[in-house]
Length: 197
Image (cartoon, rainbow, N blue to C red; front, side, top):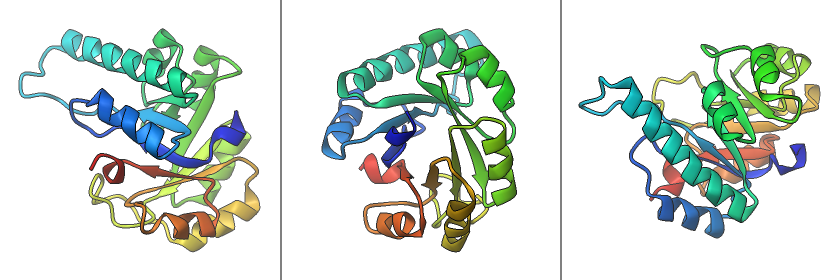
């Protein structure tokens, strides 16, 4: 599975999904990984049941796309949703559950990715705990997370020398600057806004 963590790592935009547009992006850009990221709360979003059913419905549609195009399907943050629909894996941030919890629930074959921001020690710890890949960023100014800590490209280069698992670069990456991220040592680059135009 690790060899598939390369190229463009697409993340769904934080809005009602246009499945056809996402499929077009997968085909056009030969996307190897798709992460479902659902953070939005609608104006009437006081109903947790509605939100849960939206998430399951969207996740299942995206999973079918990924199966059709041989793309890995990762769920952001939500280990239970990943288990429920049997996704390929989960991506964890610093506020989320531990790698051990995810591994226990999702099993030995699940792909577990971890956000490491700009911290190589955090990435080494994640690798030692059994993460399959780590994400560093923001590499460039990001519209999605304008206040995200920045991660200089030379941090990626240093991390590449110290880690044996794939590195995903995130934050403000587009088709104009992606090569800088790959040159610095990223195995894959995450894109949200650049793909949803």
